[in-house]
Length: 486
Image (cartoon, rainbow, N blue to C red; front, side, top):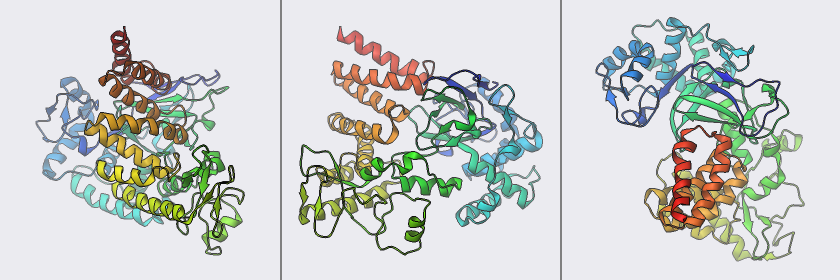
Protein backbone atom coordinates (compact mmCIF):
# COMPACT_ATOMS: atom_id res chain seq x y z
CA UNK A 1 0.00 0.00 0.00
CA UNK A 2 1.36 3.42 -0.97
CA UNK A 3 1.46 6.25 1.52
CA UNK A 4 -1.63 8.41 1.67
CA UNK A 5 -1.08 12.04 2.57
CA UNK A 6 -3.06 15.25 2.76
CA UNK A 7 -2.65 18.27 0.52
CA UNK A 8 -0.54 20.73 2.47
CA UNK A 9 -2.30 23.78 0.99
CA UNK A 10 -5.63 23.02 2.63
CA UNK A 11 -6.65 23.85 6.19
CA UNK A 12 -6.62 21.02 8.71
CA UNK A 13 -9.41 20.23 11.15
CA UNK A 14 -9.19 18.06 14.27
CA UNK A 15 -9.77 14.47 13.18
CA UNK A 16 -8.36 14.91 9.68
CA UNK A 17 -6.10 12.12 8.47
CA UNK A 18 -2.82 13.67 7.35
CA UNK A 19 -0.69 10.56 6.69
CA UNK A 20 -1.09 6.80 6.40
CA UNK A 21 2.01 4.65 5.97
CA UNK A 22 3.24 1.07 5.84
CA UNK A 23 6.50 0.28 7.67
CA UNK A 24 9.91 0.25 6.03
CA UNK A 25 10.75 -2.61 8.41
CA UNK A 26 8.89 -4.03 11.40
CA UNK A 27 8.68 -6.98 13.76
CA UNK A 28 6.07 -8.51 16.02
CA UNK A 29 7.25 -8.54 19.62
CA UNK A 30 8.49 -11.98 20.73
CA UNK A 31 6.06 -11.89 23.66
CA UNK A 32 3.22 -11.86 21.10
CA UNK A 33 4.53 -14.84 19.10
CA UNK A 34 1.81 -17.46 18.75
CA UNK A 35 -0.85 -14.92 19.70
CA UNK A 36 -0.78 -12.61 16.67
CA UNK A 37 -0.08 -13.02 12.97
CA UNK A 38 3.52 -12.11 12.21
CA UNK A 39 2.45 -10.27 9.05
CA UNK A 40 -0.80 -8.38 9.71
CA UNK A 41 -0.41 -8.42 13.52
CA UNK A 42 -4.04 -9.48 14.00
CA UNK A 43 -4.99 -11.57 17.02
CA UNK A 44 -6.72 -14.67 15.65
CA UNK A 45 -6.39 -18.39 14.96
CA UNK A 46 -2.88 -19.02 13.65
CA UNK A 47 -0.77 -21.48 11.69
CA UNK A 48 2.90 -22.02 12.55
CA UNK A 49 5.59 -21.68 9.86
CA UNK A 50 6.63 -25.25 9.05
CA UNK A 51 10.20 -24.13 8.38
CA UNK A 52 11.38 -22.17 11.41
CA UNK A 53 8.57 -23.18 13.80
CA UNK A 54 8.87 -19.65 15.23
CA UNK A 55 6.56 -17.28 13.33
CA UNK A 56 2.81 -17.66 12.91
CA UNK A 57 0.40 -16.53 10.21
CA UNK A 58 -3.37 -16.17 10.09
CA UNK A 59 -3.51 -17.83 6.67
CA UNK A 60 -1.89 -18.42 3.30
CA UNK A 61 -2.46 -14.84 2.14
CA UNK A 62 -0.38 -13.35 4.97
CA UNK A 63 2.24 -16.10 4.70
CA UNK A 64 2.69 -15.38 1.00
CA UNK A 65 2.77 -11.63 1.53
CA UNK A 66 5.42 -11.97 4.27
CA UNK A 67 7.62 -14.41 2.36
CA UNK A 68 9.92 -11.78 0.83
CA UNK A 69 10.84 -10.64 4.36
CA UNK A 70 10.73 -14.05 5.98
CA UNK A 71 12.42 -16.40 3.49
CA UNK A 72 15.95 -15.31 4.35
CA UNK A 73 15.32 -15.31 8.14
CA UNK A 74 13.42 -18.60 8.19
CA UNK A 75 16.55 -20.75 7.92
CA UNK A 76 18.42 -18.55 10.39
CA UNK A 77 15.64 -18.74 12.98
CA UNK A 78 15.53 -22.50 12.55
CA UNK A 79 19.30 -22.82 12.93
CA UNK A 80 19.52 -20.90 16.23
CA UNK A 81 16.40 -22.53 17.75
CA UNK A 82 15.46 -22.93 20.55
CA UNK A 83 17.11 -19.57 21.21
CA UNK A 84 14.81 -16.58 20.71
CA UNK A 85 16.45 -13.65 18.96
CA UNK A 86 15.92 -10.33 20.79
CA UNK A 87 13.42 -7.99 19.14
CA UNK A 88 16.02 -5.28 18.54
CA UNK A 89 18.39 -7.69 16.80
CA UNK A 90 15.62 -9.08 14.61
CA UNK A 91 14.47 -5.61 13.52
CA UNK A 92 18.04 -4.54 12.78
CA UNK A 93 18.58 -7.74 10.79
CA UNK A 94 15.48 -6.95 8.72
CA UNK A 95 16.81 -3.46 8.03
CA UNK A 96 20.20 -4.87 6.95
CA UNK A 97 18.51 -7.42 4.71
CA UNK A 98 16.31 -4.81 3.02
CA UNK A 99 19.27 -2.50 2.44
CA UNK A 100 21.44 -5.27 0.98
CA UNK A 101 18.91 -7.37 -0.91
CA UNK A 102 15.93 -5.17 -1.54
CA UNK A 103 14.98 -1.61 -2.35
CA UNK A 104 16.00 -0.23 1.03
CA UNK A 105 18.58 2.22 -0.27
CA UNK A 106 16.23 3.73 -2.85
CA UNK A 107 12.85 3.43 -1.11
CA UNK A 108 11.06 6.73 -0.61
CA UNK A 109 8.48 7.37 2.09
CA UNK A 110 6.35 10.24 0.78
CA UNK A 111 4.57 12.63 3.15
CA UNK A 112 3.45 14.98 0.36
CA UNK A 113 3.30 14.79 -3.43
CA UNK A 114 6.90 16.01 -3.72
CA UNK A 115 8.44 15.49 -0.27
CA UNK A 116 9.79 12.21 1.03
CA UNK A 117 12.30 10.62 3.36
CA UNK A 118 14.77 7.84 2.63
CA UNK A 119 16.67 5.60 5.02
CA UNK A 120 19.79 7.76 4.66
CA UNK A 121 17.81 10.83 5.76
CA UNK A 122 17.21 9.44 9.24
CA UNK A 123 19.42 10.81 12.03
CA UNK A 124 21.68 8.27 13.73
CA UNK A 125 22.99 10.53 16.57
CA UNK A 126 26.30 8.74 16.15
CA UNK A 127 28.27 10.96 18.56
CA UNK A 128 25.52 10.77 21.20
CA UNK A 129 25.45 6.97 20.91
CA UNK A 130 29.21 6.71 21.40
CA UNK A 131 28.91 8.69 24.64
CA UNK A 132 25.94 6.64 25.86
CA UNK A 133 27.24 3.64 27.83
CA UNK A 134 23.82 2.01 28.14
CA UNK A 135 23.17 2.21 24.40
CA UNK A 136 26.72 1.06 23.56
CA UNK A 137 26.32 -1.98 25.81
CA UNK A 138 23.05 -2.77 24.04
CA UNK A 139 24.71 -2.31 20.64
CA UNK A 140 27.58 -4.63 21.61
CA UNK A 141 25.09 -7.29 22.71
CA UNK A 142 23.15 -6.99 19.42
CA UNK A 143 26.39 -7.33 17.44
CA UNK A 144 27.17 -10.65 19.14
CA UNK A 145 23.65 -11.88 18.37
CA UNK A 146 23.78 -10.69 14.75
CA UNK A 147 27.10 -12.43 14.04
CA UNK A 148 25.57 -15.69 15.24
CA UNK A 149 22.21 -15.13 13.57
CA UNK A 150 23.13 -13.77 10.11
CA UNK A 151 25.33 -16.42 8.56
CA UNK A 152 24.14 -15.68 5.03
CA UNK A 153 24.60 -11.89 5.13
CA UNK A 154 27.88 -10.00 5.24
CA UNK A 155 27.50 -7.50 8.06
CA UNK A 156 28.61 -3.88 7.57
CA UNK A 157 31.72 -2.69 9.38
CA UNK A 158 31.30 -1.57 12.99
CA UNK A 159 31.00 2.15 12.16
CA UNK A 160 28.31 1.59 9.51
CA UNK A 161 26.53 -0.96 11.69
CA UNK A 162 26.41 1.54 14.53
CA UNK A 163 24.92 4.10 12.14
CA UNK A 164 22.21 1.61 11.22
CA UNK A 165 21.60 0.87 14.88
CA UNK A 166 21.33 4.57 15.71
CA UNK A 167 18.81 5.20 12.95
CA UNK A 168 16.77 2.25 14.19
CA UNK A 169 16.60 3.11 17.90
CA UNK A 170 16.04 6.85 17.39
CA UNK A 171 13.41 6.57 14.67
CA UNK A 172 11.47 3.40 15.42
CA UNK A 173 7.84 3.54 16.56
CA UNK A 174 6.26 1.26 19.12
CA UNK A 175 3.38 -0.48 17.33
CA UNK A 176 0.29 -0.46 19.54
CA UNK A 177 -2.85 -2.57 19.60
CA UNK A 178 -6.34 -1.14 20.07
CA UNK A 179 -5.85 -0.98 23.85
CA UNK A 180 -2.65 1.04 23.32
CA UNK A 181 -0.46 -1.87 24.44
CA UNK A 182 2.89 -2.49 22.74
CA UNK A 183 2.87 -5.41 20.27
CA UNK A 184 5.86 -4.65 18.07
CA UNK A 185 8.28 -2.12 16.61
CA UNK A 186 8.45 -0.54 13.19
CA UNK A 187 10.36 2.05 11.19
CA UNK A 188 8.17 4.47 9.22
CA UNK A 189 10.26 6.74 7.03
CA UNK A 190 7.71 9.47 6.27
CA UNK A 191 6.28 9.55 9.80
CA UNK A 192 9.77 9.90 11.27
CA UNK A 193 9.80 13.52 10.12
CA UNK A 194 7.40 14.41 12.95
CA UNK A 195 8.96 15.95 16.04
CA UNK A 196 7.87 15.63 19.66
CA UNK A 197 5.82 17.88 21.90
CA UNK A 198 4.28 17.22 25.30
CA UNK A 199 1.36 19.28 23.97
CA UNK A 200 0.95 17.62 20.55
CA UNK A 201 -1.31 18.73 17.70
CA UNK A 202 -1.42 15.25 16.14
CA UNK A 203 -1.55 11.62 17.26
CA UNK A 204 -0.21 8.35 15.84
CA UNK A 205 -2.50 5.31 15.92
CA UNK A 206 -2.19 1.84 14.41
CA UNK A 207 -4.41 -0.58 12.54
CA UNK A 208 -2.27 -3.69 12.52
CA UNK A 209 1.11 -2.60 11.16
CA UNK A 210 -0.29 0.50 9.38
CA UNK A 211 0.37 3.83 11.07
CA UNK A 212 -2.04 6.75 10.77
CA UNK A 213 -1.27 10.32 11.77
CA UNK A 214 -4.34 12.41 12.57
CA UNK A 215 -4.66 16.03 13.62
CA UNK A 216 -6.15 16.60 17.07
CA UNK A 217 -6.13 20.40 16.74
CA UNK A 218 -7.32 22.73 13.99
CA UNK A 219 -4.51 24.20 11.87
CA UNK A 220 -4.67 26.86 9.13
CA UNK A 221 -2.60 24.66 6.81
CA UNK A 222 -0.54 21.48 6.86
CA UNK A 223 3.03 22.48 7.66
CA UNK A 224 5.12 19.42 8.52
CA UNK A 225 7.65 21.60 10.31
CA UNK A 226 5.00 22.27 12.96
CA UNK A 227 3.32 18.87 13.26
CA UNK A 228 3.99 17.34 16.67
CA UNK A 229 3.16 14.02 18.31
CA UNK A 230 4.13 12.76 21.75
CA UNK A 231 6.93 10.19 21.79
CA UNK A 232 6.29 9.19 25.41
CA UNK A 233 3.63 8.69 28.07
CA UNK A 234 2.53 12.08 29.38
CA UNK A 235 1.35 11.09 32.86
CA UNK A 236 4.66 12.10 34.43
CA UNK A 237 6.28 15.21 35.85
CA UNK A 238 7.94 17.58 33.40
CA UNK A 239 11.35 16.50 34.71
CA UNK A 240 10.59 12.80 34.23
CA UNK A 241 9.44 13.45 30.66
CA UNK A 242 12.51 15.56 29.96
CA UNK A 243 14.87 12.89 31.29
CA UNK A 244 13.15 10.13 29.30
CA UNK A 245 13.37 12.18 26.09
CA UNK A 246 16.99 13.10 26.74
CA UNK A 247 17.92 9.50 27.48
CA UNK A 248 16.18 8.04 24.44
CA UNK A 249 16.20 10.85 21.86
CA UNK A 250 19.05 13.13 23.03
CA UNK A 251 17.17 16.41 23.40
CA UNK A 252 15.89 18.39 26.38
CA UNK A 253 12.24 19.27 25.90
CA UNK A 254 11.41 22.89 26.72
CA UNK A 255 7.88 22.96 25.33
CA UNK A 256 5.22 25.20 26.89
CA UNK A 257 3.63 22.23 28.65
CA UNK A 258 6.90 21.30 30.36
CA UNK A 259 7.32 24.88 31.57
CA UNK A 260 3.66 25.42 32.58
CA UNK A 261 3.57 26.50 36.24
CA UNK A 262 -0.06 25.43 36.59
CA UNK A 263 0.97 21.86 35.80
CA UNK A 264 4.14 22.01 37.88
CA UNK A 265 2.35 23.02 41.07
CA UNK A 266 0.02 19.99 40.80
CA UNK A 267 2.56 17.21 40.17
CA UNK A 268 3.53 16.61 43.82
CA UNK A 269 0.80 18.65 45.49
CA UNK A 270 -0.97 18.00 48.75
CA UNK A 271 -4.71 18.47 49.10
CA UNK A 272 -5.93 21.54 50.95
CA UNK A 273 -7.38 20.71 54.38
CA UNK A 274 -10.36 22.90 53.53
CA UNK A 275 -12.68 20.52 51.69
CA UNK A 276 -14.25 23.44 49.82
CA UNK A 277 -10.87 24.48 48.36
CA UNK A 278 -9.17 22.60 45.49
CA UNK A 279 -5.97 24.67 45.49
CA UNK A 280 -2.80 22.51 45.29
CA UNK A 281 -0.46 22.84 48.28
CA UNK A 282 3.27 22.48 47.69
CA UNK A 283 5.14 20.69 50.47
CA UNK A 284 8.81 19.76 50.29
CA UNK A 285 8.78 16.01 50.84
CA UNK A 286 12.36 15.17 49.88
CA UNK A 287 15.54 16.96 48.92
CA UNK A 288 16.66 17.42 45.31
CA UNK A 289 13.25 16.55 43.87
CA UNK A 290 13.24 18.32 40.52
CA UNK A 291 9.94 18.79 38.73
CA UNK A 292 11.38 20.58 35.70
CA UNK A 293 14.76 21.28 34.18
CA UNK A 294 15.09 24.81 32.88
CA UNK A 295 17.78 26.06 30.56
CA UNK A 296 18.83 29.09 32.60
CA UNK A 297 21.59 30.12 34.96
CA UNK A 298 19.57 29.36 38.07
CA UNK A 299 19.05 25.77 36.96
CA UNK A 300 22.72 25.44 36.02
CA UNK A 301 23.69 26.55 39.51
CA UNK A 302 21.28 24.08 41.09
CA UNK A 303 22.53 21.25 38.90
CA UNK A 304 26.11 22.07 39.86
CA UNK A 305 25.28 21.83 43.56
CA UNK A 306 25.20 25.56 44.29
CA UNK A 307 21.75 25.51 45.84
CA UNK A 308 20.52 23.52 48.80
CA UNK A 309 16.90 22.90 47.74
CA UNK A 310 15.18 22.58 44.40
CA UNK A 311 12.08 20.57 45.12
CA UNK A 312 9.59 22.17 42.78
CA UNK A 313 11.29 24.52 40.37
CA UNK A 314 8.37 26.89 41.05
CA UNK A 315 8.15 30.60 41.68
CA UNK A 316 8.11 31.75 45.29
CA UNK A 317 4.49 32.94 45.21
CA UNK A 318 3.19 29.37 44.92
CA UNK A 319 2.24 27.79 48.27
CA UNK A 320 5.17 25.94 49.77
CA UNK A 321 6.81 24.65 52.89
CA UNK A 322 8.27 27.63 54.69
CA UNK A 323 9.85 26.93 58.03
CA UNK A 324 7.26 25.64 60.48
CA UNK A 325 4.14 26.83 58.62
CA UNK A 326 2.46 25.71 55.43
CA UNK A 327 -0.65 27.56 54.39
CA UNK A 328 -2.94 27.51 51.41
CA UNK A 329 -2.44 30.76 49.52
CA UNK A 330 -6.09 30.70 48.43
CA UNK A 331 -8.06 30.10 51.63
CA UNK A 332 -5.30 30.46 54.24
CA UNK A 333 -5.87 27.05 55.83
CA UNK A 334 -2.78 26.00 57.81
CA UNK A 335 -1.19 22.56 57.59
CA UNK A 336 -0.32 20.93 60.91
CA UNK A 337 2.93 19.10 61.49
CA UNK A 338 1.01 15.83 61.65
CA UNK A 339 -0.60 16.39 58.26
CA UNK A 340 2.74 17.36 56.73
CA UNK A 341 4.26 14.15 58.07
CA UNK A 342 1.32 12.14 56.68
CA UNK A 343 1.85 13.72 53.26
CA UNK A 344 5.57 12.97 53.25
CA UNK A 345 4.97 9.34 54.25
CA UNK A 346 2.25 8.94 51.59
CA UNK A 347 4.56 10.32 48.88
CA UNK A 348 7.50 8.12 49.95
CA UNK A 349 5.29 5.03 50.15
CA UNK A 350 3.72 5.74 46.77
CA UNK A 351 7.05 6.38 45.07
CA UNK A 352 8.46 3.08 46.37
CA UNK A 353 5.54 0.93 45.23
CA UNK A 354 5.07 2.69 41.87
CA UNK A 355 8.75 2.04 41.19
CA UNK A 356 8.29 -1.64 42.08
CA UNK A 357 5.36 -1.93 39.64
CA UNK A 358 7.20 -0.06 36.88
CA UNK A 359 8.00 -2.23 33.89
CA UNK A 360 5.72 -5.08 34.94
CA UNK A 361 2.53 -6.05 33.14
CA UNK A 362 0.87 -6.87 36.45
CA UNK A 363 -0.54 -4.28 38.80
CA UNK A 364 -1.06 -5.44 42.35
CA UNK A 365 -4.59 -4.67 43.54
CA UNK A 366 -3.84 -4.92 47.25
CA UNK A 367 -0.74 -2.74 46.96
CA UNK A 368 -2.63 -0.13 44.91
CA UNK A 369 -5.51 -0.10 47.38
CA UNK A 370 -3.12 0.32 50.30
CA UNK A 371 -1.38 3.20 48.52
CA UNK A 372 -4.71 4.85 47.76
CA UNK A 373 -5.78 4.55 51.39
CA UNK A 374 -2.69 6.53 52.39
CA UNK A 375 -3.20 9.02 49.53
CA UNK A 376 -6.93 9.78 49.89
CA UNK A 377 -7.50 13.21 51.41
CA UNK A 378 -3.73 13.74 51.60
CA UNK A 379 -2.50 13.95 48.02
CA UNK A 380 -4.17 16.39 45.65
CA UNK A 381 -6.62 14.64 43.25
CA UNK A 382 -4.33 15.62 40.33
CA UNK A 383 -1.06 14.62 42.03
CA UNK A 384 0.86 12.50 39.52
CA UNK A 385 1.49 9.65 41.99
CA UNK A 386 -2.20 9.52 42.88
CA UNK A 387 -3.09 9.46 39.16
CA UNK A 388 -0.57 6.71 38.38
CA UNK A 389 -1.78 4.59 41.30
CA UNK A 390 -5.40 4.96 40.18
CA UNK A 391 -4.39 3.94 36.65
CA UNK A 392 -2.63 0.79 37.88
CA UNK A 393 -5.51 -0.06 40.20
CA UNK A 394 -8.18 0.41 37.50
CA UNK A 395 -6.41 -1.95 35.08
CA UNK A 396 -5.83 -4.53 37.80
CA UNK A 397 -9.48 -4.46 38.89
CA UNK A 398 -10.62 -4.98 35.30
CA UNK A 399 -8.35 -8.02 35.00
CA UNK A 400 -9.88 -9.43 38.18
CA UNK A 401 -13.41 -8.43 37.09
CA UNK A 402 -14.02 -6.42 40.26
CA UNK A 403 -16.47 -4.10 38.55
CA UNK A 404 -17.85 -2.10 41.47
CA UNK A 405 -14.45 -0.87 42.66
CA UNK A 406 -13.33 -0.31 39.06
CA UNK A 407 -16.23 2.12 38.59
CA UNK A 408 -15.20 4.09 41.68
CA UNK A 409 -11.64 4.42 40.42
CA UNK A 410 -12.72 5.26 36.84
CA UNK A 411 -14.67 8.29 38.09
CA UNK A 412 -11.59 9.59 39.90
CA UNK A 413 -9.25 8.71 37.02
CA UNK A 414 -11.09 10.62 34.27
CA UNK A 415 -10.10 14.11 35.59
CA UNK A 416 -6.48 12.91 35.89
CA UNK A 417 -6.43 11.72 32.27
CA UNK A 418 -7.90 15.02 31.08
CA UNK A 419 -5.28 16.94 33.05
CA UNK A 420 -2.23 14.95 31.90
CA UNK A 421 -3.23 13.79 28.41
CA UNK A 422 -5.56 16.57 27.28
CA UNK A 423 -9.13 16.33 26.03
CA UNK A 424 -8.30 14.58 22.72
CA UNK A 425 -6.09 11.64 23.51
CA UNK A 426 -6.66 7.96 22.64
CA UNK A 427 -6.09 6.87 26.24
CA UNK A 428 -8.84 9.16 27.49
CA UNK A 429 -11.19 7.80 24.81
CA UNK A 430 -10.31 4.23 25.81
CA UNK A 431 -10.91 5.02 29.49
CA UNK A 432 -14.41 6.30 28.71
CA UNK A 433 -15.01 3.22 26.57
CA UNK A 434 -13.83 0.76 29.23
CA UNK A 435 -15.86 2.50 31.90
CA UNK A 436 -18.92 2.47 29.65
CA UNK A 437 -18.47 -1.24 28.99
CA UNK A 438 -18.44 -1.96 32.74
CA UNK A 439 -21.56 0.15 33.23
CA UNK A 440 -23.28 -1.68 30.36
CA UNK A 441 -22.43 -4.99 32.00
CA UNK A 442 -23.96 -3.67 35.22
CA UNK A 443 -27.01 -2.50 33.20
CA UNK A 444 -26.50 1.10 34.27
CA UNK A 445 -27.57 2.09 30.77
CA UNK A 446 -27.89 5.86 31.10
CA UNK A 447 -24.40 6.24 32.54
CA UNK A 448 -22.98 3.71 30.06
CA UNK A 449 -24.36 5.66 27.09
CA UNK A 450 -22.91 8.86 28.51
CA UNK A 451 -19.44 7.30 28.72
CA UNK A 452 -19.72 5.77 25.25
CA UNK A 453 -20.67 9.16 23.80
CA UNK A 454 -17.61 10.73 25.46
CA UNK A 455 -15.47 7.94 23.96
CA UNK A 456 -17.05 8.42 20.53
CA UNK A 457 -16.30 12.13 20.52
CA UNK A 458 -12.61 11.46 21.19
CA UNK A 459 -11.97 8.27 19.20
CA UNK A 460 -13.65 9.63 16.08
CA UNK A 461 -10.93 12.31 16.10
CA UNK A 462 -7.94 10.17 17.12
CA UNK A 463 -8.78 7.01 15.15
CA UNK A 464 -11.37 7.99 12.56
CA UNK A 465 -14.76 6.39 11.90
CA UNK A 466 -13.27 3.55 9.81
CA UNK A 467 -10.87 2.22 12.42
CA UNK A 468 -11.88 -1.18 13.87
CA UNK A 469 -11.82 0.24 17.40
CA UNK A 470 -14.51 2.74 16.45
CA UNK A 471 -16.45 0.75 13.84
CA UNK A 472 -16.37 -2.80 15.21
CA UNK A 473 -16.20 -2.23 18.96
CA UNK A 474 -17.47 1.19 20.06
CA UNK A 475 -20.43 1.66 17.69
CA UNK A 476 -21.96 -1.79 18.39
CA UNK A 477 -21.79 -1.10 22.14
CA UNK A 478 -23.50 2.26 21.63
CA UNK A 479 -26.21 0.61 19.56
CA UNK A 480 -26.65 -2.18 22.12
CA UNK A 481 -26.95 0.33 24.95
CA UNK A 482 -29.54 2.38 23.06
CA UNK A 483 -31.58 -0.72 22.15
CA UNK A 484 -31.63 -1.97 25.73
CA UNK A 485 -32.61 1.49 26.95
CA UNK A 486 -35.82 1.44 24.87
